[in-house]
Length: 212
Image 1 (spheres, rainbow, N blue to C red):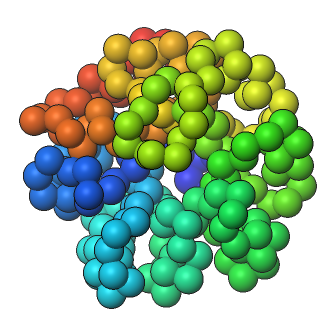
Image 2: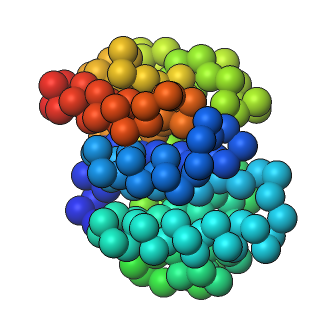
């Protein structure tokens, strides 16, 4: 993984326009200026054209702040716009194919569902893992039941890859996720649904720093 390995995913914003209280780009800007170290763009209901347009606008912002932009699921759009990477699930394009076409510096995140998938991820070419949901979440309908810190910690111990905890994380429990072994936390609603996204990002960053 480029961009400082595990430090890249320290505070990872999952930007979903469907869940932003205000303007998506303005929300991202405020969050980045207050500690977000990586942005993933997730557009489940957008047209491909709107997805590409949004990706390009967001890429200008992330490049200005020298942090990576990751595209959720859509390897084709990540390559079209020149994003830094893609985040894949078990039903998406195989990691090996994404690595082959993306090249050695392309960031590939992966959300495993089983112990075997966690263990095999490094050999397949994964850059980092997203493991969760560590806590209950309503942002992702198919996320499954919460793992809890103990189960998260067990799964995290199965790999030497950087791991970002995801699911139901906010300023109150981010420290618990870090204490369970996460290299970083991925958040959506804690920032996107806040009346003060910049302040929410700052609080999360401070919670992570206290635990570290």
